[in-house]
Image (cartoon, rainbow, N blue to C red; front, side):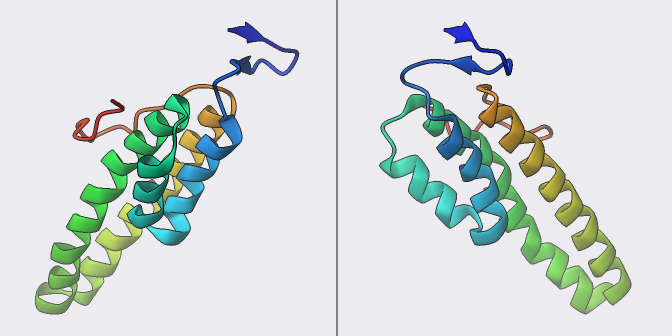
Length: 119
Protein backbone atom coordinates (compact mmCIF):
# COMPACT_ATOMS: atom_id res chain seq x y z
CA UNK A 1 0.00 0.00 0.00
CA UNK A 2 1.42 3.40 -0.94
CA UNK A 3 0.54 6.96 0.02
CA UNK A 4 0.01 9.61 -2.63
CA UNK A 5 0.34 13.41 -2.33
CA UNK A 6 -3.07 13.74 -0.64
CA UNK A 7 -2.09 11.31 2.12
CA UNK A 8 -4.56 8.64 1.02
CA UNK A 9 -3.39 5.07 1.27
CA UNK A 10 -4.14 3.42 -2.03
CA UNK A 11 -4.52 -0.24 -2.72
CA UNK A 12 -5.63 -1.75 -6.00
CA UNK A 13 -8.36 -3.63 -4.14
CA UNK A 14 -9.68 -0.63 -2.23
CA UNK A 15 -12.66 1.40 -3.47
CA UNK A 16 -12.63 4.34 -1.06
CA UNK A 17 -15.43 6.29 -2.76
CA UNK A 18 -17.99 3.50 -2.40
CA UNK A 19 -16.84 2.84 1.17
CA UNK A 20 -17.32 6.53 2.02
CA UNK A 21 -20.76 6.59 0.40
CA UNK A 22 -21.86 3.62 2.52
CA UNK A 23 -21.72 5.81 5.63
CA UNK A 24 -23.60 8.68 3.97
CA UNK A 25 -26.24 6.26 2.64
CA UNK A 26 -26.95 5.27 6.23
CA UNK A 27 -27.99 8.85 6.97
CA UNK A 28 -30.49 9.00 4.12
CA UNK A 29 -31.73 5.42 3.80
CA UNK A 30 -31.02 3.84 7.18
CA UNK A 31 -29.41 0.50 7.76
CA UNK A 32 -31.20 -1.11 4.79
CA UNK A 33 -28.87 0.58 2.27
CA UNK A 34 -25.83 -0.33 4.35
CA UNK A 35 -26.96 -3.96 4.63
CA UNK A 36 -27.46 -4.07 0.88
CA UNK A 37 -23.91 -2.77 0.29
CA UNK A 38 -22.54 -5.25 2.84
CA UNK A 39 -24.26 -8.19 1.13
CA UNK A 40 -23.47 -7.35 -2.51
CA UNK A 41 -19.91 -6.03 -2.37
CA UNK A 42 -16.83 -8.11 -3.06
CA UNK A 43 -14.46 -5.35 -1.94
CA UNK A 44 -13.12 -6.12 1.55
CA UNK A 45 -12.59 -2.45 2.38
CA UNK A 46 -16.18 -1.56 1.49
CA UNK A 47 -17.41 -4.59 3.43
CA UNK A 48 -15.41 -3.52 6.50
CA UNK A 49 -16.88 -0.03 6.33
CA UNK A 50 -20.40 -1.39 5.84
CA UNK A 51 -19.96 -3.69 8.86
CA UNK A 52 -18.78 -0.74 10.97
CA UNK A 53 -21.76 1.35 9.83
CA UNK A 54 -24.19 -1.50 10.50
CA UNK A 55 -22.76 -1.94 13.98
CA UNK A 56 -23.86 1.65 14.65
CA UNK A 57 -27.08 2.02 12.66
CA UNK A 58 -28.83 -1.21 13.72
CA UNK A 59 -28.62 -0.46 17.48
CA UNK A 60 -29.64 3.15 16.84
CA UNK A 61 -32.71 1.95 14.93
CA UNK A 62 -33.55 -0.37 17.84
CA UNK A 63 -33.11 2.48 20.33
CA UNK A 64 -35.55 4.60 18.31
CA UNK A 65 -38.48 2.49 19.55
CA UNK A 66 -37.98 3.13 23.29
CA UNK A 67 -37.21 6.79 22.56
CA UNK A 68 -40.55 7.10 20.75
CA UNK A 69 -42.28 5.46 23.71
CA UNK A 70 -40.57 7.90 26.07
CA UNK A 71 -41.74 10.75 23.86
CA UNK A 72 -45.34 9.56 23.88
CA UNK A 73 -45.72 8.17 27.42
CA UNK A 74 -43.30 10.10 29.63
CA UNK A 75 -42.57 13.48 28.11
CA UNK A 76 -42.56 14.82 24.59
CA UNK A 77 -39.69 17.15 25.51
CA UNK A 78 -37.58 14.28 26.85
CA UNK A 79 -38.26 12.14 23.78
CA UNK A 80 -37.36 14.96 21.40
CA UNK A 81 -34.21 15.80 23.38
CA UNK A 82 -32.99 12.20 23.36
CA UNK A 83 -33.80 11.84 19.66
CA UNK A 84 -31.88 15.04 18.85
CA UNK A 85 -28.82 13.85 20.77
CA UNK A 86 -28.89 10.52 18.93
CA UNK A 87 -29.42 12.24 15.55
CA UNK A 88 -26.55 14.69 16.06
CA UNK A 89 -24.25 11.86 17.16
CA UNK A 90 -25.25 9.74 14.16
CA UNK A 91 -24.62 12.58 11.71
CA UNK A 92 -21.24 13.42 13.24
CA UNK A 93 -20.10 9.81 13.42
CA UNK A 94 -21.23 9.05 9.86
CA UNK A 95 -19.40 12.09 8.47
CA UNK A 96 -16.23 11.24 10.38
CA UNK A 97 -16.41 7.62 9.19
CA UNK A 98 -17.07 8.76 5.63
CA UNK A 99 -14.03 11.03 5.58
CA UNK A 100 -11.83 8.33 7.13
CA UNK A 101 -13.07 5.80 4.55
CA UNK A 102 -12.36 8.19 1.70
CA UNK A 103 -8.81 8.54 3.02
CA UNK A 104 -8.40 4.77 3.08
CA UNK A 105 -9.14 3.89 6.71
CA UNK A 106 -12.03 1.84 8.08
CA UNK A 107 -13.19 3.69 11.21
CA UNK A 108 -15.00 1.82 13.96
CA UNK A 109 -17.90 3.79 15.44
CA UNK A 110 -17.45 4.40 19.18
CA UNK A 111 -19.73 3.13 21.94
CA UNK A 112 -20.97 0.05 20.07
CA UNK A 113 -19.72 -3.55 20.02
CA UNK A 114 -18.61 -5.25 16.81
CA UNK A 115 -21.58 -7.54 16.31
CA UNK A 116 -21.27 -7.75 12.52
CA UNK A 117 -17.88 -8.90 11.33
CA UNK A 118 -16.14 -8.24 8.02
CA UNK A 119 -15.62 -11.89 7.13
